[in-house]
Length: 275
Picture 1 (spheres, rainbow, N blue to C red):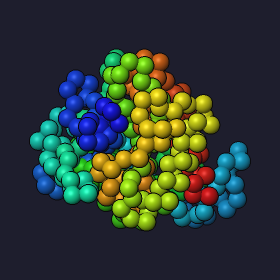
Picture 2: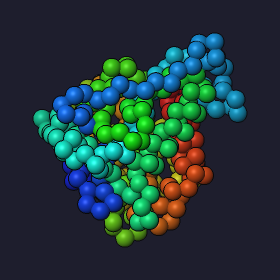
Picture 3: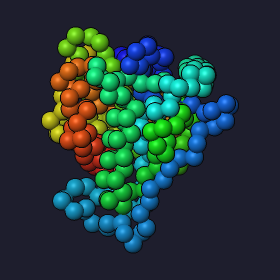
Picture 4: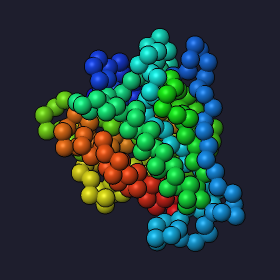
């Protein structure tokens, strides 16, 4: 993530104007841990046992997916919290979280990631998946990146998907990419995470979305500097849906129809991975 995460990651760099940060992970306030994750569940009787309506893949009942909407709406007002160093894996530390980036017209990454994550949550819940969100709204602070990873581990998630948008100022930079931990630090970060990354890549491509022309290769980006991925003990990826600083892409990212397009592609890809 060039901008959405800064030089060390797409999670937490301290932005200047419309923050250019990266993948998000959470900050605890005043030394406390992240707020409790929010859960959406469907009772067993309501879960489909056969393919979901419209022929989309139906995951096995009881699967847990953790969705991590990058950043948070209250981060900018609390630099004393989000600038605290936290463990980032591989013996490193990084800031607890960042403010994220924004389009040139001011539409923020944290608002985008929350909106898309809620849409994905609702689509997966309708298929019988139990969804846990790493933050309950878009008005809080954090949680820190290490705490976001801990939520996925605690929930024994079948998949953890962190949702972001980038903020590269490189002329012509556009397209999505999917980051995964590399080299893997545990078995879950190996084949399962790579398979999840490919599922997300293929799903977004099938929705007609272009792969990144400025980072990674063919829509995939192996990373060793993202705390949420380094600290995960479950299959985990981080999706940079597009570049908010590119005018054409910003128009899609800012529109409800565009966000629904991203959400549907992500939900279909997660369901296909689980199935």
